[in-house]
Length: 466
Image: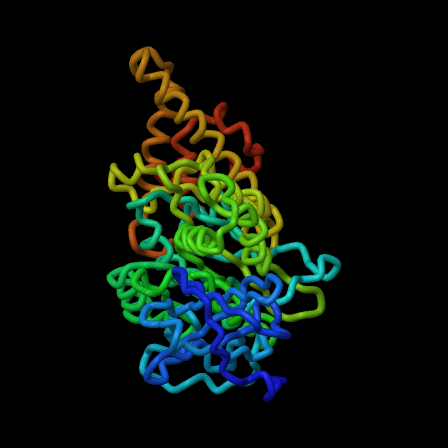
């Protein structure tokens, strides 16, 4: 409940620095409290309290401070956190980075107003993520499977096709079985160009996927401080859809590097002591406050699964952003510049990829009883092919045995036929069929991850068919 005595405009501004304004003599103010900043001509901007020290309060203005002046700007403290209106009509709509509709449609009919910073999930009530989500991307579905409640980041690089992959996953993803209608996607684009935002909007609309998607767009031209809100607003919408409407929600966040750059900029404006590469020392806990909102809760319907996408500066996987993200999340999908140069899309580099919760979502009654062995054999054979590719560059292909040359051909076909799939969905059944066909080209003595029964059922059948 907002205290009417405190909803008076405060004029004690002492300084404006970047996205921050400094206010003196503000009494009874709470941390992360919602603030309205009113400039000339009744221009009202949204902000929040980010620091309280004695009688000084620092307010972060999400729409930026351009045009504000110390003498004329006024501040209203609203005694509540930043809230988002949520309701059953959220899907099929496009929003800006702070959750306001920008598609020309009506305002959301609010069933509830939720805090965007959310509530931590009680560890006792967390349920282990399980059950398969089909992304339509063979390299993910077969070998790095995504399960409901998991957080599985994509590590990309500047200029790689992660935006294209993100839109494909949003369009292609689905649940298998009777709960397919309960699936929804919340897509948050953070600090993207206008062209990229239009690409996302057009892709979702043209392929008929918008009816199950809530699309949040924060543009590069928007104030950087607004980027700090966008993933939290998107996750608040996802939490309503999951835990109130019982949906299984896939949240795609791209690009988290833009979020971290905004975090560094605002931290520097605060005058905080920087840590690694200038990022604030609390970036780990800040990222965790976003990533850990994925999960399943005992006794509550629905689930939230996250795919955060980040572009690694200089393709450096040890950079603080991917490094800290790797500690918090459950695996990673890595995109490769060399595959991208060869025109292979998606350019997923299989060997460093990992889904730590994959075994909770595959196997009997979920995907296929032989899926674990199938994935292990594909990975093992592809790793051997990669090693032989390096060896053949030294000794020449003629220095390899016949079995080694078969493995070498297998690795090339994996790149050109299995990983490469361009912009179409590949069902899990099609992925299995293609994988078994490629493995059937190898001699039995190489297929050490498969049982005799699996070789008889799948490998010999494909050899006979060919």
